[in-house]
Structures are given as structure tokens and as C-alpha cells.
Length: 122
Image (cartoon, rainbow, N blue to C red; front, side, top):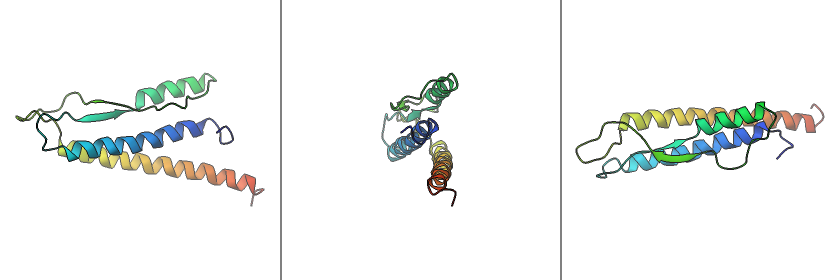
């Protein structure tokens, strides 16, 4: 959607990542007692950095999904083979919620500015 500008694609990808990340964290939490379950993570930052470099070089951000889901490396493995850490997941849940709210606020401000322009400054 070029009428909003290229930042829109990056905001959209960041918001979509937060939604996917919420699902991944919820999935991890729902499997906290499942033997041999390996916690997953939604990876976005590297793709975002690549997209920002592309934008700064004058390119256009891609419209493909910027989030990949991988097994989370590290973490303490319990005797049942599960590596989900409740404290870690809850802190990631809070961090993700704050990021989502910040991106939505930024998008709403951007769209509000466009609305003002469309209305002729009123």
C-alpha cells in the first residue's frame, strides 16, 4: 500500500510478528508439562534489520512474512526432556505485549495524520 508509505510495510510486519510471537509463546506455555517438548521462538529481528538496510539503501521492503519459527537454543533441560521455562515465557509474553501496543499506537498515529491530511487539516 504505497499510499501510506514504505514504513507501513515494516510496521505491518512488526505487528504480524507480535501476533505470531504471541501464538508461539502460548504454545510453549500450553506444553510446559509435555515430556520432550522443545520450546519454540519466533525470530524477526534479523529480517527486520535486513529490511531496514534495504529501505535505507532506497529499496522497498518485501511483503513476505518476516517471522520464522525455530527451536529455542539453550535453556535448562528438565529430566523429562522439556525445556520450557515459565518465568522466561511470562517475561517474553509481557515484552511482546508492550511491543505490540507500541506498534499499534505508532500505526494509529500515522493513520490519524493521514486522516487529517485527507480532511484538509481539520
